[in-house]
Amino acid sequence: MSGVALQARDVSRWAGGKTLVEAASLALRSGEVLGIIGPNGAGKSTLVRMLAGLDRPDRGEITLLGRPLMQWPAHERARRLGYLPQHFTPHWDYRVTELLRLGLDRTPQGMAGLSALAAQHGLEPLLERRWSSLSGGERGRSLAAAVLAPSPGVILADEPAAALDIGQAAALMALLKGRAAMGAAVAVVVHDLNLAFRWCDRIAAMGGGRIRGEGVPSAMSAPGVLEDIFGIEFERLHAADGSAVVLAVRRPQG
Amino acid sequence: MTWLLPPLGLLAGLLLGAETLSPAEAWSVLRDPGQPLAQLIWQWRMPRVLAAGCVGALLALGGVVFQGVFRNPLAEPYLLGSAGGAAMGATVALLVALPVPSSLALPALAFAGAWGATWLVLALARLAGPASIAALLLAGVAVAAVLGAMRSFLMLALSDETVSLQAVLSWALGGVQTPAWPQLALLAGLTGAALLLCLALARGLDLLGLGEAVAESFGLQVRRFVALAVLAGAFVVAVSVVWGGLVGFVGLMAPHLARWQVGALHAPLMPRAAAIGATLAMLCDGAARAVLPPAEIPLGLVTALIGAPFFLLILAREARRR
Image 1 (cartoon, rainbow over the protein chains, first blue to last red):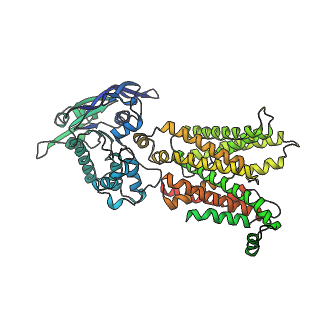
Image 2 (cartoon, helix red, strand yellow; image 1 turned 180 degrees about the vertical axis):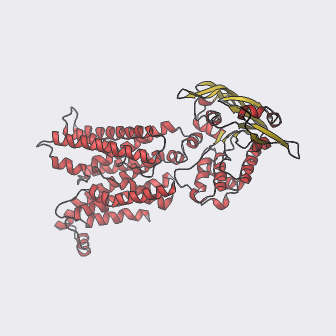
Image 3 (cartoon, each protein chain N blue to C red; image 1 turned 90 degrees about the vertical axis):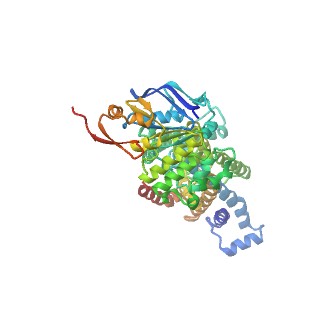
């Protein structure tokens, strides 16, 4: 269960004289959901874009299944690695079925899986609908279905819940968790700390372009860690199952 | 439905002209192909109308490729400056004494001009940030204006008795000449090749419509693909400009009309857009010949007259969508 699917070693990226990510090392293991948390500008999206192969690290190395990410042929990588972007607006008013076809194109069996894919994500009634006519939740589900169509072994999601309501966000996390249970290695950037603590197996916290801490949710929600990263104080409540619920309370003095 | 349009356009193009045929005359032409009027139709109008159809199809394909690659619903060869670049190259080939035969220099320079102008517009638009619809159009307008001024200067400075100003000017304003049959066969072959070339880009354009990040993660090598698509688009535009001069807005209208019918996927879109573009060009060319007989008005004038309001319509729709 703990095979490393995607690994970043000491990756850094600069842009315009500014360090976006500095010496970040991270391992995504099969069967595990890794949450990435941190304040805005911490470098989370930049790191995820590098992990997805969209941006090249200026220093350091990323390997997918032991092979350098940039050495994978584009179509092979596309089959093994799914990327859910932070913002997604197609430039043309595609139908849901067209979006799913584009996602399925990456699989060897191609269009044969279309009806199964639609059923799996509850999209059958939406297949002929155009993107502009979908609600936010329907858009999220359609995009996730297209991205996850080839059942990629690595799933990278950059704040996929940003535009979703609380129920839709939980459903999306459950979907990612289910993929991990099927053996995928998942990394997801999450703004809502409690969503991260509830659904992730491990948490990596970023601040100022660096990874400032990594561990299981109970360790990361312990006093001191979050204060250090976000620069504010947190209060901890305890849910019935013993897990921590955190509340941001106020700025520290000074 | 779409496939019925080009035959109708062809028919209208054959009837329209300095002498517009009545249905009775058309019937007599069909019954007696030996009469002088029939000769006129088959020898003169037929190749001319077919050439206009090819030019329209090429403009439509250029529009589909440029709209897809720039992900901009207002992109088209004329507004983007690529047609202006091709015209600049062609003008140089026509007016400047070059060491190569003009049958070679003309298409080569038209292609180089279209390609160079498109990249120039793209580079200028990128200065204004990624994916700005307005920036791309403004850059296109600016580049087209500079190229147009340079072309006019070349025409005034270099035209002499051998190349009349009149001929170059009427071509620059957009107008299809009546080709000889072998020429027409070449144009038709190139149009077919252009369609196949564009169809090869269809899947990549579909993916690019998802945005660069998702396209890349779905396996499209975005930078390489964009470079390839611009090259293909420049080829298509260059062929259309060599045969039809500067004809605006067909490349804008045809893709949209086709998209309303079949949706956004590019493979079904391309042949339909080409059919609609061909029809538009044949109709407009017919009108250009029929309005002021015995004179012809430039084809580009007719297409601009109906295309510019269409442009505003799309612009308004986009403004509402965003």
